[in-house]
Length: 153
Image (cartoon, rainbow, N blue to C red; front, side, top):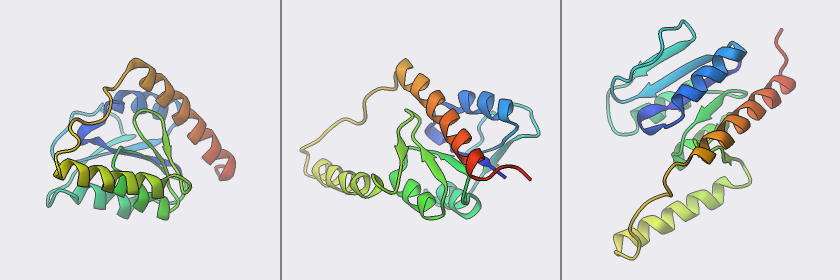
């Protein structure tokens, strides 16, 4: 069954995921290191993990599988989920794929080194309304693609 996993601590599109998942009858796991308000629904499950910084990531990797969708900006988490066959979308709608994850990991490492040297400051571009729109379109596409690949019994 197709499930959606949200790396929720800094995800700006949780409400959009809830609406789309409800329309498709999907279960959403909202995984975080601290309590986050979620809609009261049997199909939305808040998972609060305790432990180190990567505990939420580890929980997602352990539970997400082939034909699930993971929503995250976390590049190492995306790489681990792709290895398990999950589809991974950034909140801006850009997918992580087998074709682009290596470049994303390398860019992340390079930027980390440049930040340590004081050469780069700042972070990603601010989240925009267009990002939300693209995300909704790509989430719908991912659901349809996975459903065609594995029709319900």
